[in-house]
Image 1 (cartoon, rainbow, N blue to C red):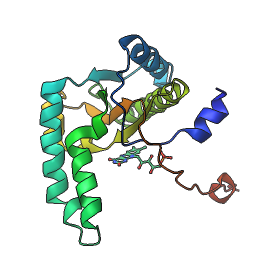
Image 2: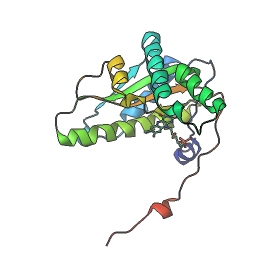
Image 3: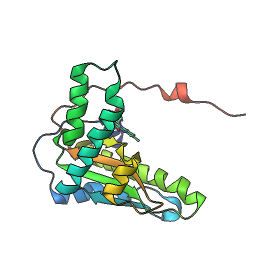
Image 4: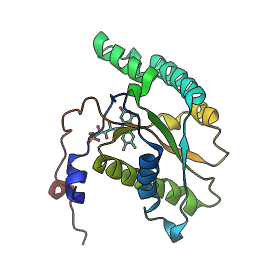
Length: 188
Ligand SMILES: Cc1cc2nc3c(=O)[nH]c(=O)nc-3n(C[C@H](O)[C@H](O)[C@H](O)COP(=O)(O)O)c2cc1C
């Protein structure tokens, strides 16, 4: 698959088949993550594979978080709420759940740069995954201090993303984009 094709065709997927992802393929995809650029090549990321015990604690906290906030939104239909809740409980049955973390920062520059470099690694992971018929979703749940505690993030560290990965069951429709031309501005 051409890189441009992978970039344009990648979709966020929220439901996965039961087909496992081999360790070999997972490591190949994560290896792509390590080729992201980073300041001075400091490679601030770590890839934590979330096992069943931790996954169950994460799911409980995710459901608690959604129940306490987003699922109180009266504009959401009951069906939509049930779908969101089920996803929080199951992570779409993804066979792989990862926390991609940045190591603790010591300086303002590191605070700025570490999450950026780690985000670049995550996008590499999604593109390499897509090329290998694996899809996923990037979740923001790592912003929750209770999730940080479950994953045991050291002080000053950060979760850049919790990623659910697997062979897709359903590929959702494309989410529209604003063209680069509309986002483009020349400074004097
Ligand atoms: C930093 C980041 C955080 C995200 N967090 C969530 C999330 O918590 N829950 C969710 O359903 N999707 C999340 N997404 C996925 C976006 O909703 C998705 O990328 C966007 O709707 C565009 O769809 P596409 O990726 O299929 O093009 C996140 C994406 C990014 C980059």
